[in-house]
Image (cartoon, rainbow, N blue to C red; front, side, top):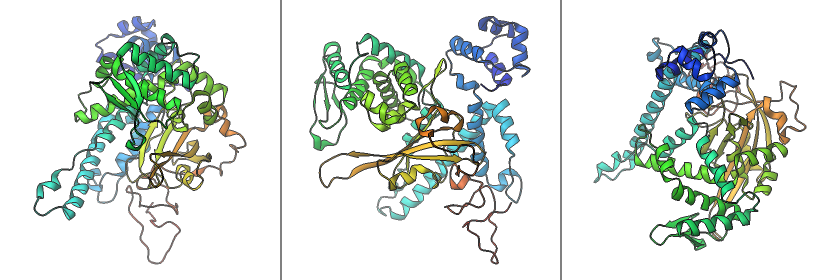
Length: 485
Protein backbone atom coordinates (compact mmCIF):
# COMPACT_ATOMS: atom_id res chain seq x y z
CA UNK A 1 0.00 0.00 0.00
CA UNK A 2 1.37 3.44 -0.92
CA UNK A 3 1.72 6.05 1.81
CA UNK A 4 -1.48 8.10 1.97
CA UNK A 5 -1.42 11.54 3.56
CA UNK A 6 -4.96 12.71 4.31
CA UNK A 7 -4.54 15.11 7.21
CA UNK A 8 -6.99 17.71 5.94
CA UNK A 9 -9.73 15.14 5.36
CA UNK A 10 -9.23 13.61 8.79
CA UNK A 11 -9.32 17.03 10.43
CA UNK A 12 -12.51 17.90 8.55
CA UNK A 13 -14.10 14.61 9.64
CA UNK A 14 -13.22 15.40 13.26
CA UNK A 15 -14.64 18.92 13.01
CA UNK A 16 -17.84 17.66 11.37
CA UNK A 17 -18.31 15.23 14.28
CA UNK A 18 -17.47 18.02 16.78
CA UNK A 19 -14.62 16.02 18.29
CA UNK A 20 -11.37 17.18 19.84
CA UNK A 21 -8.08 15.59 18.86
CA UNK A 22 -7.97 13.87 22.24
CA UNK A 23 -11.53 12.57 21.84
CA UNK A 24 -10.93 11.17 18.35
CA UNK A 25 -7.58 9.70 19.35
CA UNK A 26 -9.26 7.88 22.25
CA UNK A 27 -11.96 6.49 19.92
CA UNK A 28 -9.31 5.23 17.47
CA UNK A 29 -7.00 3.86 20.14
CA UNK A 30 -4.22 6.29 19.24
CA UNK A 31 -2.20 8.83 21.17
CA UNK A 32 -3.17 12.47 20.69
CA UNK A 33 0.34 13.30 19.47
CA UNK A 34 0.22 10.55 16.84
CA UNK A 35 -3.18 11.77 15.60
CA UNK A 36 -1.84 15.32 15.47
CA UNK A 37 1.03 14.14 13.26
CA UNK A 38 -1.43 12.45 10.90
CA UNK A 39 -3.52 15.62 10.68
CA UNK A 40 -0.39 17.66 9.92
CA UNK A 41 0.60 15.17 7.16
CA UNK A 42 3.73 14.26 9.10
CA UNK A 43 2.60 10.62 9.19
CA UNK A 44 0.54 8.67 6.65
CA UNK A 45 -2.79 7.00 7.30
CA UNK A 46 -2.18 3.28 7.83
CA UNK A 47 -4.59 0.52 6.88
CA UNK A 48 -5.25 -0.27 10.56
CA UNK A 49 -6.29 3.34 11.21
CA UNK A 50 -8.46 3.34 8.07
CA UNK A 51 -10.23 0.17 9.19
CA UNK A 52 -10.73 1.62 12.67
CA UNK A 53 -12.26 4.78 11.14
CA UNK A 54 -14.60 2.58 9.10
CA UNK A 55 -15.71 0.68 12.21
CA UNK A 56 -16.14 3.71 14.48
CA UNK A 57 -17.97 5.96 12.02
CA UNK A 58 -19.58 3.32 9.74
CA UNK A 59 -18.06 5.06 6.74
CA UNK A 60 -16.55 4.06 3.42
CA UNK A 61 -12.75 3.96 3.62
CA UNK A 62 -12.64 5.16 0.00
CA UNK A 63 -13.23 8.60 1.49
CA UNK A 64 -9.53 8.48 2.38
CA UNK A 65 -8.35 6.72 -0.78
CA UNK A 66 -5.71 8.14 -3.12
CA UNK A 67 -7.73 6.44 -5.87
CA UNK A 68 -10.57 8.80 -4.94
CA UNK A 69 -8.15 11.72 -5.39
CA UNK A 70 -7.18 10.47 -8.84
CA UNK A 71 -10.80 10.16 -9.90
CA UNK A 72 -11.56 13.67 -8.62
CA UNK A 73 -8.58 15.09 -10.54
CA UNK A 74 -9.88 13.44 -13.73
CA UNK A 75 -13.34 14.92 -13.12
CA UNK A 76 -11.83 18.36 -12.49
CA UNK A 77 -9.93 18.12 -15.78
CA UNK A 78 -13.30 17.62 -17.47
CA UNK A 79 -14.74 20.60 -15.60
CA UNK A 80 -11.82 22.83 -16.61
CA UNK A 81 -11.91 21.67 -20.22
CA UNK A 82 -15.53 22.76 -20.61
CA UNK A 83 -15.13 26.22 -19.06
CA UNK A 84 -15.41 29.10 -21.53
CA UNK A 85 -12.39 31.39 -21.78
CA UNK A 86 -14.32 34.27 -20.19
CA UNK A 87 -14.88 32.18 -17.07
CA UNK A 88 -11.13 31.84 -16.65
CA UNK A 89 -10.40 35.54 -17.09
CA UNK A 90 -8.81 35.59 -20.52
CA UNK A 91 -9.54 36.05 -24.18
CA UNK A 92 -7.81 32.79 -25.00
CA UNK A 93 -8.54 29.45 -23.42
CA UNK A 94 -6.86 29.53 -20.01
CA UNK A 95 -5.76 26.40 -18.22
CA UNK A 96 -5.98 25.20 -14.66
CA UNK A 97 -2.80 23.28 -13.96
CA UNK A 98 -2.75 19.65 -12.92
CA UNK A 99 -0.94 20.69 -9.73
CA UNK A 100 -3.79 23.04 -8.80
CA UNK A 101 -6.36 20.30 -9.38
CA UNK A 102 -4.27 17.89 -7.30
CA UNK A 103 -4.22 20.45 -4.49
CA UNK A 104 -8.03 20.74 -4.58
CA UNK A 105 -8.50 16.97 -4.60
CA UNK A 106 -6.02 16.44 -1.75
CA UNK A 107 -6.72 19.33 0.60
CA UNK A 108 -10.10 20.71 -0.46
CA UNK A 109 -12.16 17.70 -1.63
CA UNK A 110 -15.43 19.29 -0.53
CA UNK A 111 -14.71 22.24 -2.83
CA UNK A 112 -13.88 19.78 -5.61
CA UNK A 113 -17.17 17.95 -5.15
CA UNK A 114 -19.08 21.24 -5.30
CA UNK A 115 -17.33 22.21 -8.54
CA UNK A 116 -18.03 18.80 -10.08
CA UNK A 117 -21.68 18.95 -9.00
CA UNK A 118 -22.07 22.47 -10.44
CA UNK A 119 -20.53 21.24 -13.68
CA UNK A 120 -22.95 18.29 -13.76
CA UNK A 121 -25.91 20.60 -13.25
CA UNK A 122 -24.62 22.93 -15.95
CA UNK A 123 -24.30 20.05 -18.40
CA UNK A 124 -27.82 18.87 -17.58
CA UNK A 125 -29.16 22.38 -18.19
CA UNK A 126 -27.32 22.59 -21.54
CA UNK A 127 -28.60 19.15 -22.55
CA UNK A 128 -32.17 20.14 -21.67
CA UNK A 129 -31.89 23.35 -23.67
CA UNK A 130 -30.49 21.48 -26.68
CA UNK A 131 -33.22 18.85 -26.45
CA UNK A 132 -35.86 21.55 -26.08
CA UNK A 133 -34.52 23.45 -29.10
CA UNK A 134 -34.55 20.28 -31.20
CA UNK A 135 -38.04 19.39 -30.08
CA UNK A 136 -39.32 22.88 -30.87
CA UNK A 137 -38.15 22.36 -34.45
CA UNK A 138 -40.60 19.48 -34.86
CA UNK A 139 -43.27 20.38 -32.32
CA UNK A 140 -46.95 20.61 -33.05
CA UNK A 141 -47.62 24.31 -33.76
CA UNK A 142 -51.01 23.94 -32.11
CA UNK A 143 -49.47 22.64 -28.90
CA UNK A 144 -46.48 24.87 -27.98
CA UNK A 145 -46.49 23.49 -24.44
CA UNK A 146 -45.24 20.25 -25.96
CA UNK A 147 -41.78 21.79 -26.23
CA UNK A 148 -41.61 22.39 -22.48
CA UNK A 149 -41.97 18.75 -21.49
CA UNK A 150 -38.23 18.10 -21.36
CA UNK A 151 -37.24 16.95 -17.88
CA UNK A 152 -34.01 15.90 -16.27
CA UNK A 153 -33.36 12.22 -16.95
CA UNK A 154 -33.63 10.35 -13.63
CA UNK A 155 -31.49 7.47 -14.94
CA UNK A 156 -28.35 9.62 -14.99
CA UNK A 157 -28.99 10.85 -11.47
CA UNK A 158 -29.47 7.28 -10.25
CA UNK A 159 -26.29 6.14 -12.02
CA UNK A 160 -24.38 8.96 -10.35
CA UNK A 161 -25.58 7.71 -6.95
CA UNK A 162 -24.10 4.25 -7.52
CA UNK A 163 -20.97 5.69 -9.13
CA UNK A 164 -20.20 7.95 -6.17
CA UNK A 165 -20.62 4.96 -3.81
CA UNK A 166 -18.13 2.95 -5.92
CA UNK A 167 -21.00 0.50 -6.44
CA UNK A 168 -20.31 -1.03 -3.02
CA UNK A 169 -22.84 -1.12 -0.16
CA UNK A 170 -21.34 -2.97 2.78
CA UNK A 171 -24.62 -3.13 4.71
CA UNK A 172 -26.43 -4.91 1.88
CA UNK A 173 -23.47 -7.21 1.25
CA UNK A 174 -23.26 -8.25 4.90
CA UNK A 175 -27.02 -8.80 5.19
CA UNK A 176 -27.09 -10.84 1.97
CA UNK A 177 -24.30 -13.07 3.29
CA UNK A 178 -26.23 -13.65 6.52
CA UNK A 179 -29.37 -14.53 4.55
CA UNK A 180 -27.41 -16.87 2.28
CA UNK A 181 -26.27 -18.82 5.35
CA UNK A 182 -29.46 -18.68 7.45
CA UNK A 183 -31.73 -19.60 4.53
CA UNK A 184 -29.69 -22.74 3.82
CA UNK A 185 -28.43 -21.65 0.40
CA UNK A 186 -24.74 -22.44 0.97
CA UNK A 187 -24.40 -25.73 -0.91
CA UNK A 188 -27.16 -25.39 -3.48
CA UNK A 189 -26.75 -25.61 -7.24
CA UNK A 190 -28.33 -22.78 -9.30
CA UNK A 191 -31.51 -24.87 -9.73
CA UNK A 192 -31.59 -25.74 -6.02
CA UNK A 193 -31.01 -22.10 -5.12
CA UNK A 194 -34.02 -21.04 -7.21
CA UNK A 195 -36.18 -23.72 -5.58
CA UNK A 196 -35.21 -22.63 -2.06
CA UNK A 197 -35.91 -18.98 -2.80
CA UNK A 198 -39.30 -19.91 -4.26
CA UNK A 199 -39.96 -21.90 -1.10
CA UNK A 200 -39.06 -18.93 1.11
CA UNK A 201 -41.32 -16.62 -0.88
CA UNK A 202 -44.19 -19.05 -0.36
CA UNK A 203 -43.60 -19.95 3.29
CA UNK A 204 -42.64 -16.51 4.63
CA UNK A 205 -44.71 -14.23 2.42
CA UNK A 206 -47.44 -16.37 0.86
CA UNK A 207 -46.11 -15.58 -2.63
CA UNK A 208 -46.59 -18.10 -5.44
CA UNK A 209 -44.07 -18.18 -8.30
CA UNK A 210 -45.57 -18.93 -11.70
CA UNK A 211 -44.73 -18.46 -15.37
CA UNK A 212 -45.15 -15.38 -17.54
CA UNK A 213 -46.20 -15.66 -21.19
CA UNK A 214 -42.95 -15.44 -23.20
CA UNK A 215 -44.34 -12.85 -25.60
CA UNK A 216 -44.75 -10.22 -22.88
CA UNK A 217 -41.01 -9.50 -22.83
CA UNK A 218 -40.87 -9.02 -19.03
CA UNK A 219 -38.20 -10.25 -16.64
CA UNK A 220 -40.31 -10.08 -13.49
CA UNK A 221 -43.93 -9.19 -12.71
CA UNK A 222 -45.24 -9.09 -9.14
CA UNK A 223 -48.91 -8.75 -8.24
CA UNK A 224 -49.11 -7.60 -4.59
CA UNK A 225 -52.87 -8.24 -4.40
CA UNK A 226 -52.71 -11.84 -5.62
CA UNK A 227 -49.29 -12.39 -3.98
CA UNK A 228 -48.02 -13.78 -7.26
CA UNK A 229 -44.54 -13.45 -8.77
CA UNK A 230 -44.41 -14.28 -12.48
CA UNK A 231 -41.15 -15.06 -14.29
CA UNK A 232 -40.56 -15.83 -18.00
CA UNK A 233 -39.97 -19.47 -18.99
CA UNK A 234 -36.77 -18.94 -20.99
CA UNK A 235 -34.47 -17.55 -18.28
CA UNK A 236 -31.86 -19.72 -16.56
CA UNK A 237 -32.01 -21.00 -12.99
CA UNK A 238 -29.47 -18.36 -11.96
CA UNK A 239 -31.57 -15.60 -13.53
CA UNK A 240 -34.69 -16.95 -11.78
CA UNK A 241 -32.84 -16.88 -8.46
CA UNK A 242 -31.75 -13.29 -9.11
CA UNK A 243 -35.30 -12.11 -9.85
CA UNK A 244 -36.64 -13.87 -6.75
CA UNK A 245 -33.83 -12.34 -4.71
CA UNK A 246 -34.88 -8.90 -5.92
CA UNK A 247 -38.47 -9.56 -4.87
CA UNK A 248 -37.33 -10.81 -1.46
CA UNK A 249 -35.36 -7.59 -1.01
CA UNK A 250 -38.55 -5.56 -1.49
CA UNK A 251 -40.49 -7.81 0.88
CA UNK A 252 -37.93 -8.24 3.66
CA UNK A 253 -35.64 -5.20 3.46
CA UNK A 254 -38.22 -2.47 2.89
CA UNK A 255 -37.14 -0.29 5.83
CA UNK A 256 -33.44 -0.70 5.00
CA UNK A 257 -34.00 0.28 1.37
CA UNK A 258 -36.11 3.27 2.39
CA UNK A 259 -33.37 4.48 4.74
CA UNK A 260 -30.71 4.09 2.07
CA UNK A 261 -32.68 6.10 -0.51
CA UNK A 262 -33.52 8.84 1.99
CA UNK A 263 -31.27 11.35 0.23
CA UNK A 264 -32.65 14.91 0.05
CA UNK A 265 -30.53 15.66 -3.02
CA UNK A 266 -32.63 13.36 -5.22
CA UNK A 267 -34.61 15.56 -7.58
CA UNK A 268 -37.72 13.38 -7.92
CA UNK A 269 -39.55 10.29 -6.77
CA UNK A 270 -38.58 8.61 -10.04
CA UNK A 271 -34.92 8.85 -9.04
CA UNK A 272 -35.67 7.42 -5.58
CA UNK A 273 -37.53 4.49 -7.14
CA UNK A 274 -34.70 3.79 -9.57
CA UNK A 275 -32.12 3.83 -6.76
CA UNK A 276 -34.37 1.61 -4.63
CA UNK A 277 -34.64 -0.88 -7.51
CA UNK A 278 -30.89 -0.75 -8.04
CA UNK A 279 -30.26 -1.48 -4.36
CA UNK A 280 -32.71 -4.40 -4.46
CA UNK A 281 -30.87 -5.78 -7.48
CA UNK A 282 -27.59 -5.31 -5.61
CA UNK A 283 -28.94 -7.39 -2.72
CA UNK A 284 -30.10 -10.10 -5.12
CA UNK A 285 -26.66 -10.36 -6.71
CA UNK A 286 -25.01 -10.43 -3.28
CA UNK A 287 -27.46 -13.14 -2.19
CA UNK A 288 -26.74 -15.55 -5.03
CA UNK A 289 -23.05 -14.53 -5.25
CA UNK A 290 -22.19 -14.13 -1.53
CA UNK A 291 -19.18 -11.95 -0.92
CA UNK A 292 -16.58 -14.24 0.65
CA UNK A 293 -17.47 -17.35 -1.33
CA UNK A 294 -17.52 -15.40 -4.58
CA UNK A 295 -14.24 -13.61 -3.83
CA UNK A 296 -12.54 -16.89 -2.91
CA UNK A 297 -13.76 -18.44 -6.16
CA UNK A 298 -12.63 -15.41 -8.16
CA UNK A 299 -9.13 -15.55 -6.70
CA UNK A 300 -8.94 -19.33 -7.12
CA UNK A 301 -9.99 -19.12 -10.79
CA UNK A 302 -7.84 -16.04 -11.48
CA UNK A 303 -10.96 -13.99 -12.23
CA UNK A 304 -11.88 -16.18 -15.21
CA UNK A 305 -15.36 -14.81 -15.95
CA UNK A 306 -16.54 -17.80 -17.98
CA UNK A 307 -15.54 -20.28 -15.26
CA UNK A 308 -17.17 -18.13 -12.57
CA UNK A 309 -20.36 -18.02 -14.64
CA UNK A 310 -20.36 -21.81 -14.93
CA UNK A 311 -19.75 -22.26 -11.20
CA UNK A 312 -22.53 -19.91 -10.10
CA UNK A 313 -24.93 -20.37 -13.01
CA UNK A 314 -25.25 -16.71 -13.99
CA UNK A 315 -24.44 -14.67 -17.09
CA UNK A 316 -21.17 -13.12 -18.21
CA UNK A 317 -22.54 -9.64 -17.56
CA UNK A 318 -23.76 -10.54 -14.05
CA UNK A 319 -20.29 -11.83 -13.13
CA UNK A 320 -18.66 -8.66 -14.49
CA UNK A 321 -21.08 -6.47 -12.58
CA UNK A 322 -20.52 -8.38 -9.33
CA UNK A 323 -16.74 -8.24 -9.72
CA UNK A 324 -16.97 -4.44 -9.80
CA UNK A 325 -18.48 -4.42 -6.27
CA UNK A 326 -15.84 -6.40 -4.33
CA UNK A 327 -14.45 -3.58 -2.19
CA UNK A 328 -14.93 -4.72 1.42
CA UNK A 329 -12.00 -3.09 3.30
CA UNK A 330 -10.80 -6.25 5.08
CA UNK A 331 -11.28 -8.50 2.01
CA UNK A 332 -10.77 -6.51 -1.16
CA UNK A 333 -10.95 -7.96 -4.64
CA UNK A 334 -9.39 -6.44 -7.75
CA UNK A 335 -10.80 -2.89 -8.04
CA UNK A 336 -12.50 -3.17 -11.42
CA UNK A 337 -14.22 -0.63 -13.64
CA UNK A 338 -17.29 -1.85 -15.49
CA UNK A 339 -19.03 -0.43 -18.55
CA UNK A 340 -21.81 -1.54 -20.88
CA UNK A 341 -22.42 0.08 -24.28
CA UNK A 342 -24.59 -0.47 -27.33
CA UNK A 343 -23.60 -0.36 -31.01
CA UNK A 344 -24.27 3.36 -31.17
CA UNK A 345 -21.84 4.04 -28.33
CA UNK A 346 -24.47 4.84 -25.71
CA UNK A 347 -23.31 3.96 -22.19
CA UNK A 348 -26.10 2.25 -20.25
CA UNK A 349 -24.03 1.07 -17.27
CA UNK A 350 -20.83 2.45 -15.77
CA UNK A 351 -19.27 1.59 -12.44
CA UNK A 352 -15.84 2.30 -11.03
CA UNK A 353 -14.50 0.71 -7.87
CA UNK A 354 -11.40 2.91 -7.92
CA UNK A 355 -10.03 5.90 -9.77
CA UNK A 356 -11.23 5.49 -13.37
CA UNK A 357 -13.41 8.42 -14.48
CA UNK A 358 -16.02 8.01 -17.20
CA UNK A 359 -16.57 11.20 -19.17
CA UNK A 360 -20.08 12.60 -19.52
CA UNK A 361 -19.07 14.92 -22.37
CA UNK A 362 -18.99 13.72 -25.96
CA UNK A 363 -19.10 9.96 -25.51
CA UNK A 364 -16.26 7.51 -24.86
CA UNK A 365 -13.01 6.88 -26.73
CA UNK A 366 -13.45 5.06 -30.09
CA UNK A 367 -10.06 3.32 -29.58
CA UNK A 368 -11.42 1.45 -26.56
CA UNK A 369 -11.76 -2.30 -27.15
CA UNK A 370 -15.33 -2.31 -25.84
CA UNK A 371 -16.40 -0.99 -29.25
CA UNK A 372 -14.22 -3.44 -31.18
CA UNK A 373 -16.02 -6.29 -29.40
CA UNK A 374 -19.01 -5.91 -31.75
CA UNK A 375 -16.81 -7.04 -34.67
CA UNK A 376 -16.02 -10.33 -32.85
CA UNK A 377 -19.30 -11.43 -31.21
CA UNK A 378 -18.90 -13.78 -28.26
CA UNK A 379 -15.10 -13.53 -28.12
CA UNK A 380 -13.20 -11.99 -25.21
CA UNK A 381 -10.86 -9.24 -26.40
CA UNK A 382 -7.95 -7.95 -24.34
CA UNK A 383 -6.37 -4.52 -24.42
CA UNK A 384 -3.61 -2.71 -22.62
CA UNK A 385 -4.58 0.95 -22.68
CA UNK A 386 -2.79 4.09 -21.52
CA UNK A 387 -4.66 7.19 -20.41
CA UNK A 388 -3.30 10.73 -20.96
CA UNK A 389 -2.11 10.83 -17.32
CA UNK A 390 0.20 7.87 -18.03
CA UNK A 391 -1.76 5.21 -16.14
CA UNK A 392 -2.01 1.85 -17.89
CA UNK A 393 -5.04 -0.43 -17.62
CA UNK A 394 -5.87 -3.97 -18.66
CA UNK A 395 -9.32 -4.16 -20.28
CA UNK A 396 -11.31 -7.19 -21.36
CA UNK A 397 -14.45 -6.84 -23.46
CA UNK A 398 -17.10 -9.12 -24.91
CA UNK A 399 -20.51 -8.86 -26.50
CA UNK A 400 -23.61 -10.10 -24.69
CA UNK A 401 -26.88 -10.81 -26.46
CA UNK A 402 -30.40 -11.21 -25.13
CA UNK A 403 -33.18 -12.74 -27.21
CA UNK A 404 -36.40 -11.05 -26.14
CA UNK A 405 -38.93 -12.69 -28.44
CA UNK A 406 -39.17 -15.19 -31.24
CA UNK A 407 -38.22 -15.03 -34.90
CA UNK A 408 -38.20 -11.54 -36.35
CA UNK A 409 -38.05 -9.84 -32.96
CA UNK A 410 -35.07 -7.55 -32.23
CA UNK A 411 -32.36 -8.77 -29.87
CA UNK A 412 -30.64 -6.72 -27.20
CA UNK A 413 -26.97 -6.53 -28.15
CA UNK A 414 -24.43 -4.92 -25.85
CA UNK A 415 -20.72 -4.99 -25.26
CA UNK A 416 -19.46 -5.11 -21.69
CA UNK A 417 -15.94 -4.32 -20.56
CA UNK A 418 -14.11 -4.87 -17.31
CA UNK A 419 -10.87 -3.05 -16.57
CA UNK A 420 -8.31 -2.65 -13.82
CA UNK A 421 -5.05 -0.86 -13.16
CA UNK A 422 -2.16 -2.81 -14.67
CA UNK A 423 -0.64 -3.26 -11.19
CA UNK A 424 -3.44 -5.79 -10.49
CA UNK A 425 -3.12 -7.59 -13.84
CA UNK A 426 -0.96 -10.43 -12.47
CA UNK A 427 -4.02 -11.69 -10.55
CA UNK A 428 -6.02 -12.17 -13.77
CA UNK A 429 -5.91 -15.10 -16.18
CA UNK A 430 -6.31 -12.55 -18.98
CA UNK A 431 -2.78 -11.23 -18.38
CA UNK A 432 -1.20 -14.43 -19.74
CA UNK A 433 1.08 -13.80 -22.70
CA UNK A 434 0.85 -10.00 -22.60
CA UNK A 435 4.03 -7.94 -22.74
CA UNK A 436 3.90 -5.47 -19.87
CA UNK A 437 7.51 -4.36 -20.25
CA UNK A 438 7.16 -2.71 -23.67
CA UNK A 439 5.90 0.88 -23.27
CA UNK A 440 4.76 0.95 -26.90
CA UNK A 441 2.23 -1.88 -26.47
CA UNK A 442 -0.59 -0.01 -24.61
CA UNK A 443 -3.11 1.72 -26.87
CA UNK A 444 -3.34 5.46 -26.13
CA UNK A 445 -6.98 6.14 -25.20
CA UNK A 446 -8.82 8.94 -23.41
CA UNK A 447 -12.00 9.58 -21.46
CA UNK A 448 -13.69 11.02 -24.55
CA UNK A 449 -12.77 13.16 -27.54
CA UNK A 450 -14.06 16.45 -26.17
CA UNK A 451 -11.97 16.18 -22.99
CA UNK A 452 -8.94 14.29 -24.38
CA UNK A 453 -5.74 16.33 -24.75
CA UNK A 454 -3.96 13.99 -27.19
CA UNK A 455 -3.07 16.27 -30.13
CA UNK A 456 -2.16 13.63 -32.76
CA UNK A 457 -5.11 11.22 -32.50
CA UNK A 458 -6.31 10.36 -36.02
CA UNK A 459 -9.51 8.82 -34.61
CA UNK A 460 -10.64 12.03 -32.91
CA UNK A 461 -14.35 12.65 -33.52
CA UNK A 462 -14.57 16.09 -31.88
CA UNK A 463 -12.03 18.79 -31.08
CA UNK A 464 -10.71 19.07 -27.54
CA UNK A 465 -12.76 21.83 -25.94
CA UNK A 466 -9.90 22.90 -23.67
CA UNK A 467 -7.79 24.40 -26.47
CA UNK A 468 -8.23 26.48 -29.60
CA UNK A 469 -8.06 24.86 -33.02
CA UNK A 470 -4.88 25.42 -35.01
CA UNK A 471 -6.32 26.04 -38.49
CA UNK A 472 -3.56 26.35 -41.09
CA UNK A 473 -4.41 26.23 -44.79
CA UNK A 474 -0.80 25.32 -45.63
CA UNK A 475 -0.70 22.16 -43.50
CA UNK A 476 -2.79 18.98 -43.53
CA UNK A 477 -2.29 16.52 -40.66
CA UNK A 478 -3.57 13.07 -39.72
CA UNK A 479 -5.53 14.61 -36.87
CA UNK A 480 -8.80 16.14 -38.13
CA UNK A 481 -8.68 18.77 -35.37
CA UNK A 482 -5.12 20.08 -34.85
CA UNK A 483 -4.76 22.14 -31.67
CA UNK A 484 -2.61 25.01 -30.51
CA UNK A 485 -0.10 24.06 -27.83
